[in-house]
Length: 377
Image (cartoon, rainbow, N blue to C red; front, side, top):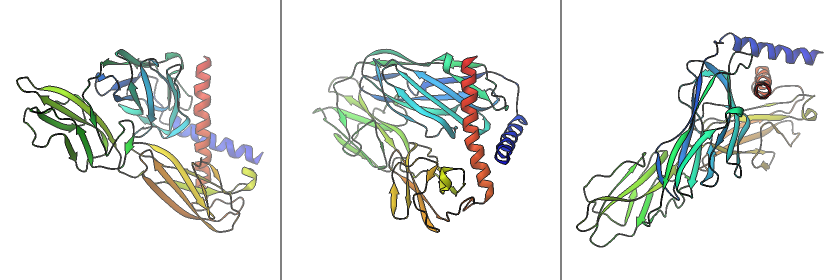
């Protein structure tokens, strides 16, 4: 009975907190947009899934993003930069059906205007017009009103035109794949220069930017130093003798040279959980490429790709625990603390953390239950 009342108190506190800031239901819009509307066959490009909630406080998004599987291949789905911090169901790709599903939430709720949900990276392997949209029967946005009220939702598809590829080849010895995030900031590109031709080039955040008409002194290879984090495009113009300037080709590069943000980690031990063994809960965010995985080090052992909550292997009374968060580019951030594995006692941060842990787990369950119940209506 005591444990039951404990859970009821936490749930009641959560509902009371979110109800205090509830608003009436209003429209929200969920959109899929590419930075540009035209790409060559074989090129890699990003589609941003983002939401605006029309000044309503929302706390959960369930989305099923659709794309033509016979024309596009999903290279990856990044949560880097997402306003959502809790993922009951992380993005999953059904490549045969051409559907990407996900459920994310933000426990305290948030006003959202153009908030990033995820960034989807595609590669085009067929020409023609393609639509990236949503399955409206399984795409929902819930308000932060303690009741799981579903907001009226407008869905906006993105249209992209895939054009035939050119035969001009631009390669990069430093960043050989357009599909991969790299830590290295110095970017080199090579191309085969035509004798007598003039070249102009630029590195830009937009693939549609056009280099100027001034001929560059360096041709065939060029290095750009210390590029900022982000997705960049090398765009090349060529002027053959007696002809006008024309776009010869482009090359995409993705750079993330910044480590993930601070790792939040704490430990606990509860007789009714995990057989009374001590466990740790951890999380981190990464604004650019997103968190890829965590490693946990304890008592001379390493658990690769550990999942939170993680049950500690050692029963030593006092030990050092390290949690290392890695982003997709391979950057890492480490958090280290001393763990005292005493049953029934919250370590490192005090009893408030146990309530926070319970609230997070319950919110995750409530998000799933709310979205599942909405599906049945």
